[in-house]
Length: 429
Image (cartoon, rainbow, N blue to C red; front, side, top):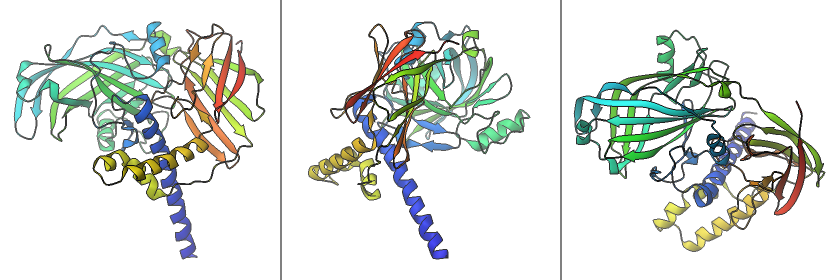
């Protein structure tokens, strides 16, 4: 009996590992090659760091990008263009800090920080920080050698003392809760502790002004409709390009923000299917917000493909480019492995959302003929999974919003490269 339990447990672990590798590679391979390719998006869950969405080594600065760039896709961009963003009027908060790297310590360095603007919806809390440094810090920091900037211990509370974001340092969050008399269970997601994730990147660097603009995109399955947000952090970490050396800045910053009414009174609108070309497709949700259209459906009577890659081959896919560059694998073997993975990935993902490897991208079309693709945001609500061997669950967020929708829309899904058209109509509420 013990041997049987061990064997079952071993097989279960292998299945979980394979599924995790498949999901990680699917994101990494397709996104790295076709979608972002320009800056790193790191996915973080409280007390867990997942490197699977890290697309390139390091973060490239978006120095020529619009000041409101968020990296969250066309839906959020449209919302911002239509005023769904809150510009703050708060002043810089100054802190006399200690700046340290492996070679030296500099005391009494003035570091000013402010929050310039933010967006909050059900899924995203995106905040733009501006950091200003006094000339004294130039003894340690070279602006053209900065790879990344992180607010290492950032914690965000709302007016009901719900932890909207708590970082990945469980001990730090526990200490914060003790300090603020918050008796919360941090072991699982609950109404007082939102298990939120993070991706972040420097959006703009001005060496002449000794300043950095930093985008912090925090996301969750569903944020509450908070009316006030308070940000706390004491530690800023600056990573340098191409080397492991980091600069640690210790100070104390706190910001209190009022969330605008348009964000805490946000409501969704809904669509229903009025015509579908394929009886296998069953839409269970079509939800419209200020920042996107969420579509959820199941495909019935479809056969799940047999797995054709071993866990060793999946591991190889993780490091394929690096191994190829270091001549640990031949070009012929790399091409064979890529082809094998792409064939399996094609069969395992019946609906395509991005135009890579000659696949067409599914889309939504409004009554004006405007086309909306998937937002492809790393924070969007989306999943693709087999419910069982004969049923597939597809959930995706498209970039149509309340600002460019119509009462009737068309959803075109490329199902194994064949278009399936669904017509939907807005439900009057």
